[in-house]
Each structure stands twice: as structure tokens, then as C-alpha cells.
Amino acid sequence: MTISLYDASIETYRQALAGVTDFMSVSEDYFRAQGVDLEELAETRLIEDMAKFRFQIVSVHHHTANAAEALVTGEFGGPNDKTRYDWAGLKGRIEAARTALDAYTPEQINARAGQDVTFRMGDHARTYTAENFLLSFSLPNVFFHATTAYDLLRMKGAPIGKRNFGGPHRVKG
Image (cartoon, rainbow, N blue to C red; front, side, top):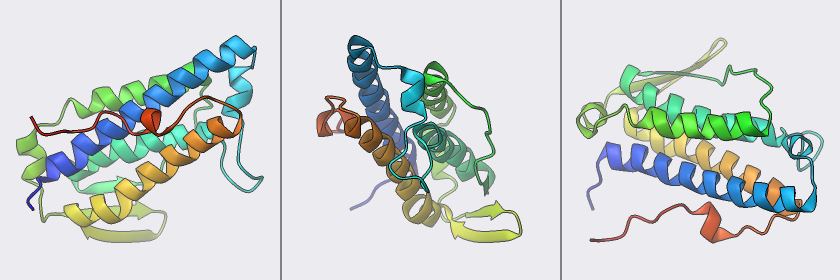
């Protein structure tokens, strides 16, 4: 099986972001109809020592849009967006990530195959190949934070399921 770095990264990021867009939209409609304060939802967390819904969405943005940039530049840092987004702002972060991915071409991303991507956070630095950055760091983080956001909304009663989470499948033909 051969898969390009572009398809494994950008197209998978797009699929994940489409899923997040869908489950947030369905949840928003449901919670508005129930009279639930969306800002209260942004503050929801699974357990006290875990980050809030707001952080999960900011992290999905970071591990898609900023990770795509890192595939090109070879540098990636921890999330530094400290903005306290409201619900509309969180939806905007996901849309901004989707738009950011449009800036990358298959040629641009595929040319980085085998090249270094270094993750830096404080004094910590770890260097990966672009493929290993994607497969062992970036994508696990995308799906961890997307799943946590989904779980928080589901826990609050949103009528969402796998069909909302998965995004559009890339089928043959």
C-alpha cells in the first residue's frame, strides 16, 4: 500500500475537521432548542483535572492547521493560543483550520517526506521525520482532542453519533 504524505495528513485533517464541524453543528442546534447556554458547554470538562471543551477545540485547530504548517517548515510548538473563545469563536477556529489547509498543495507536502519536523516546547525538543510526526504525534493528538470534545457534548445529551464524528469517507471512485 502506498499513500502520499499529503493524503495521510491534509486529507485526514480535512476529514477530522469536517466531523468536528458536524458534531458541533448538530449539538448547537439541539442545545439551542433545549435552552442550554452554549457558553456553559464551552466550560464543560470530563473530570476536574482535564481540560475544558474550549481547550479541546483549540487543540484540534492546533494539531491540524499548525501541524500542516509544521510539515512544511519543519518546526512545531505547543499550543500558544490563550484566547478564551466563546462558542462561535470555537466554531470559527475549526473553520479557520479548514481554510488554512487549502493553502497546501500535494507537491508542497509530499516534498517534505523523510524530512525533519522538530517539536519544541520550553527546553524540550524532539525531532521526527515528517511521516513519524504525522503518525505518532499529530494524528493521535487530533483524534484525542476531537474525541474528547465529542464525548463532552455527548455526555451533556447531544444526539450525535459516529456518523457525525467520522466526517466524509474517502471512497473509491
